[in-house]
Length: 191
Image (cartoon, rainbow, N blue to C red; front, side):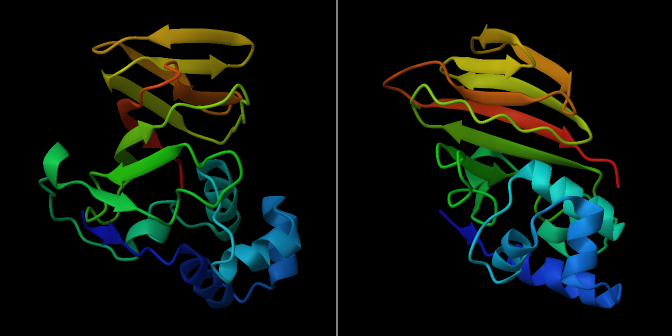
């Protein structure tokens, strides 16, 4: 499987410098801790999608720009079999190691939403909630999905969907203890 080296930290740092903004100014506008921001910019830590949204909003840049870095209006054809793992989001971020992101929209430039296949490993009982501006639509492809949304919990089976405002604290995970769950997630982040 191909991996896309998104170098999100470098792109954030370049965008910040292009805006003539100090790290301290970006942390004040985004609410992200300055030490953590420096770790992100040095690729020593990986932001989750909510943190990416806060940083991009503070910089006045579309979130997807950090993944694609270019502007193009060409359509992109993709398939579930040709998806590419995006290692700039997965893994090192606390509480997100159970999530593997495979982008279906990496090569679509200037996009306003991201289409991603997410494979969720069986998880422990810990729930790490995130919130960010935008909306999310999820279709369960395989397994069972647990969605914690605010104070409510939902269990979805293959073929079922959920669509929600992502400003409400939420968490998704496999509802199965010994098997992964696969979903198609479409996320919209306002610029």
